[in-house]
Amino acid sequence: MKLNLKNKFTKELPADLVIDNSRRQVKEACFSYVNPKQTKNPEILHVSEDMSSQIGISEADVDSETFTKVFTGNKVLENTTPYAMCYGGHQFGNWAGQLGDGRAINLFEVEHNDKHWAVQLKGAGETPYSRTADGLAVLRSSIREYLCSEAMFHLGVPTTRALSLGLSGDEVMRDMLYDGNQAFERGAIVCRVAPSFLRFGNFEIFAARKDHKTLKTLVDYTIRHHFPKIGTPSKENYIKFFAEVSKRTLEMIVHWQRVGFVHGVMNTDNMSILGLTIDFGPYGWLEGFDFGWTPNTTDKQHKRYRFGNQPNIGLWNLYQLANALYPLIEEVEPLEEVLENYKIDFEKKSLEMMCSKLGLMVNDDKDNELIQRLEDVLLLTETDMTIFFRNLSNFKLGDAGKGLQIVEDSFYVPNEVSDTIAQQWRDWFKSYDVRLIDESLSNTDRKERMNAVNPKYVLRNYMSQLAIDDANKGNYKLIDELFQVLKQPYAEQPEYEKWFAKRPDWARHKVGCSMLSCSS
Image (cartoon, rainbow, N blue to C red):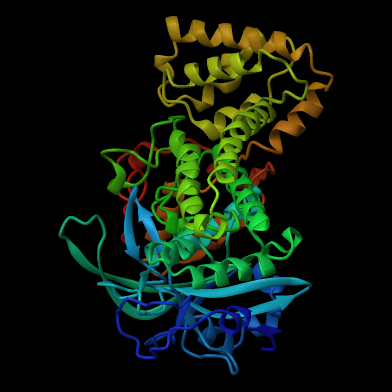
């Protein structure tokens, strides 16, 4: 397996001088060297062929013993030095101090076809940042992370990627719902790939420790390699850097809102500096349209990371990043201007996104009101977001009287759509029909445009859980089936029509389908 290996991160940034792999506070260093844990009986369950080709791995390489060993952590490639990154973070609004890669180990960097990638294993053993944990991961959460990483990419959402899903052959003790019921689960390892895994927290930790020298070194490195168009590091360009991070963060979150994705744990240590979706833990897609929904049981009381609050949390997290960068800029006004622009741009981008979902291409001052009325009526009875918007593309000019019939499959309790609720729907469809008169697109062209932004297939939690249940019995076919379906989420794929369906009743309150924890 010949790769064009690079080591920019470890070569250009300060390393932890302590070599011992013991839990500790790591000072004045961006990373610590650490090797993955050897496992009992490693096995690769699935590989993303698209991702393997992106980093220069051939089909023959994928089938090799070397591939299995390297991407389960059982072999370190020659001339590479695996490491774990040091970072801090705000968790659920509170500063948590040093966190770091507690169960992620970066193997190496690679360049292929003029693209730079960092390659990382999740669940490959403890690091100096593991705190009280074991650095391992289980099959349950690893299947979810593997499938979701690639599903997000094919949806057109900025995201980290996944190369492979493997079994370690070891058993791992977990308390799935943090309720005192510990049990052994099958250990697993996901290989994650991204241009960089740097997070807001990588910068926060040095600002919190008043280590401005290392902070500047890291910011300069990040601009040089990941934001080269900004130019030579300077106070002015640090502001441009922050503005670009803010822009990318907003773009990512607007995409989340477009497809109904709820991250679940938007702590600052889970925010990519590149504006990529990172750390797929207790995430979920909206079933019923609900601004207040979060899949994370840990957040059940306050719902800080609920669907409708994600844009606000993005802004809150950017405030923390602004505080971290302030020592290099020493001016409040330009940072505040960037944050103010985030608010303005969100209103604009959100409106554009919702208009695209409705097939509205011509600007109209009343579109905000039309969208607000739609969101209000969507909340009157449980309405499947994915199915509603996908089927709405079948609405043709003059179909006002057929509107309810067109979207009826999206209602979880059809009997509730009567009397007052039905009338509100009819009123909205009349307004929508009138609004479409101003559009120049034909019904066919509008449907095509709408179907390009409203996915037919998303990774509903119950789908993942079915794959997990089968995998726990040694059957991995469903992992591949879902992987294949989600490679073309906007295509009709009639052979997979069974996955274009509302969440089944059995999944409404089932663990893993409606409620998830950070336990993985």
